[in-house]
Length: 157
Image (cartoon, rainbow, N blue to C red; front, side):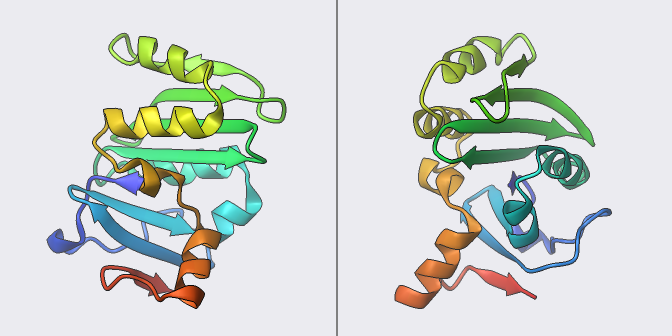
């Protein structure tokens, strides 16, 4: 999940409805701050992700990307506590497309792409580095074990 609420402004994760569990925040591409939430990623529950993103979006525009088994994609865009756009594609998540007129063509094209390519296209549209949109909590833990996390990463337990 990614929100336009940089750490420099004193933002700390913990919007209402935050779940217990570990997470990691990172500010990879200003003005975006990314939140990798271990419990949400492990659950792979689109409704839990939607609820968390809605609360997170009270801080600023927020995006969520979830890729399951390299076949399924969930993309959500929320602002002001409301989900404005949703894309679901794949055998497990089914198919859904909800978007404002300015995003509808992009989401329709993304729906036809393999999930990794769709994530890259959607991230680029919002100025978020595509590699950060594809990164998951397990990837962060692996990076920490192999070469250590970047200085900007704040790990919360």
